[in-house]
Length: 92
Image 1: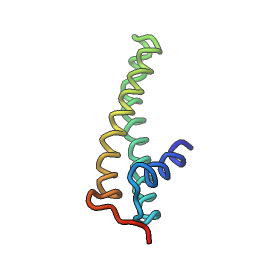
Image 2: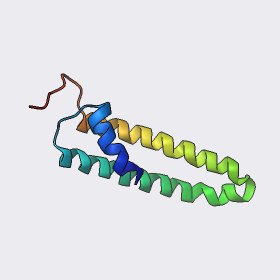
Image 3: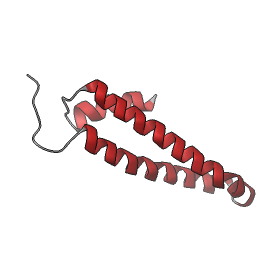
């Protein structure tokens, strides 16, 4: 639900993009799926071990940091694709 709110705000306010919204939403969705798969896969490897040896507050903080870092890297490259740098095109 957060991504459904976040995408239009980033597209219209942060990047002031007038590109093809379907193309941009498709790439945004692909990034969201990739982030979900990578983070869930990685967390399934180490969380059972961490749950046995570390208090939940600590490994939950680690999950947050891992998800944030993976999201940052993937969205950086996706934003380079869907919101290219250069002179902003104005809506006519």
